[in-house]
Image 1 (cartoon, one colour):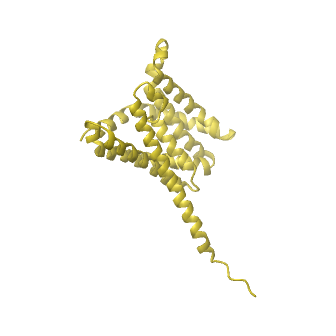
Image 2: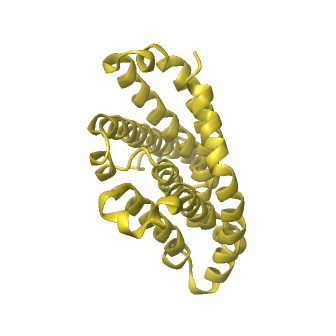
Image 3: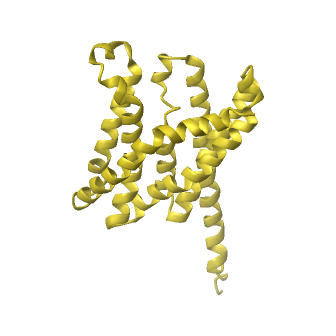
Amino acid sequence: MPSSPSPAPDLAIQPALATRVVGGFGTSILAGAALGVVAWIADQLGYPLEVLLPANAIGAWLGVAFVLGASARTIPTGALRGVIGLLSAVAAYYVLIAVFGQGFRAIGASHAATIWGAVALAAGPVMGGAGAIWRHGTGWPRAIGVALLAAALFAEGVAFGMPRLIHLDQLGNDPGALLFGAEMLLGLALPALLLRRGERINGYLAMAALAIVAVLAIGPVTTLVRELADRF
């Protein structure tokens, strides 16, 4: 007897595609929510214990978006995973603030979430796309993708840590300065760790250019966003 006809190719592909989409975006939501929860927990620990969970560092949030983007099969879906992850992190963090917080932070949680959500909408696609480009790209685009994350890590370490790192006699009592120093070193190491030998020079050139801009901008931009988030 003739065998039964096989499913049409498009019908066979659709369930697999749907599974990948749900799984990928579900992972982005869970990873982002986990970041938001850990960031909230770090807030409760207070300094210097919160340094043990550096989930409130800018580099940590951008790094999660980069990794989520790198897990995607295409560059557009990488950008989308990055923004979904950061939006989920913001949502989880401020839900916990609204439920367990006190005073002005709890009252202004929805407003602050809106402001930081707008930042996530801007940064998520960039860093998620950078991660996807690192995985799927070649040449200069791949080098620039890694340089975006490396420059952000280095710039945060320089802008917030350098004024404290120069006081060598106080480092034993300032674990935050050591964290920023480690972030600088990680940023410097990323092009060597993530890029192929022939791409590393381009990666460091791109990182140098981006880091100059980031070092100058990260302090004022962070201050401005925090001021806007605290107005309600």
